[in-house]
Amino acid sequence: MQTLAALLLLAAHALLVVFASGVPEPIAPLLAASVYGPLWPLQALGAPVFAPTGGWGWSSPSVLGWAVLALFWGGFWRGAVWLVARFTRRG
Image (cartoon, rainbow, N blue to C red; front, side, top):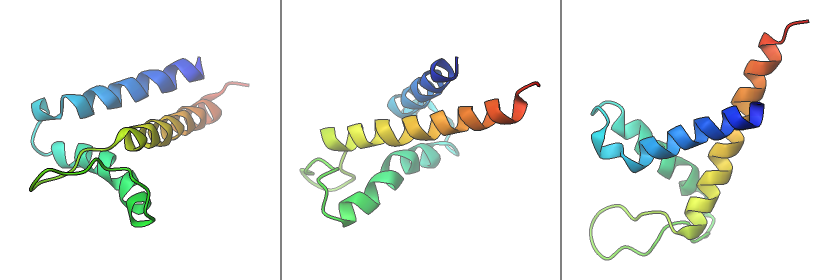
């Protein structure tokens, strides 16, 4: 059950990122930070987590970047679900 809850949270997060143009303006920077924040330290270490940019603006994540984000946020949501389950367990 915990795995399903974590997957649903990850899917909701991914949908918000994909449809970021439709979210209220105050939430958009948080969604951008949820994509770029985990990747910037890896880019500083030389990992190719961003696709090459063709001009001005922000580069999108590369395939490696998207994989890293899926693992990062999957682990985050899994941990959040585990904490909630641990502190709400009856017994």
